[in-house]
Length: 239
Image (cartoon, rainbow, N blue to C red; front, side):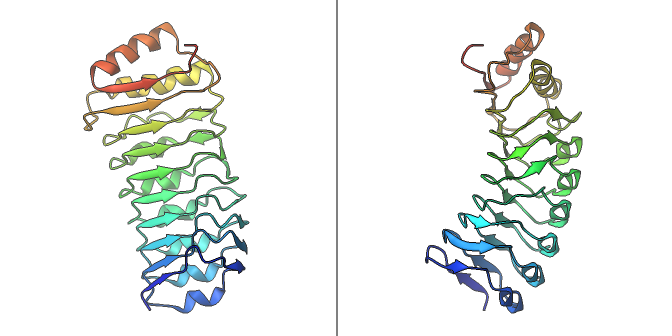
């Protein structure tokens, strides 16, 4: 068996550990089964041929195992809306072939692990609606990343160079965070300093609904220059 799609089937209970015995499996979709519950079995980490794993909208999963970091052929990983309450495992940094990672709408806490900066194939990183606190400098190594969605988190720190190295970026969404003016200025300053290196024709920085933490006059001047280079910068409504 190479392809298993059981999405939208009213499945309930625990994900069976025996799925880890399907050694030829390349595609596994259990999404939109609201009553799946418990932990994601570590045995799924034995699926060495798996390229696609979708467990999204399984609202009652509790955490996910570090063994998922052993799925080195994985290209697509979607754990959106699983109610995962933990930190992002550093072991996900082993997924060198990953192009899409969606961990949005969970209860994830702490910092984004710097190991994710090693995901050189990553194009779409979606982490909105969590409680994540910081973006590490290593994230700036993701030169193929086009989408970074981190709205509605608890961001209070942006590492040096964490945004300025994202040369392929098209969208950076950091709206609905409790950003200080200093942090807003840091974000804008990083993008301004690297304005010549971005390859996309049009780029968007979304800082909307950041609780009216407006940029300084210096940052406003940098925004004007960014806009001349094709950036669309969205600020809180009162700015």
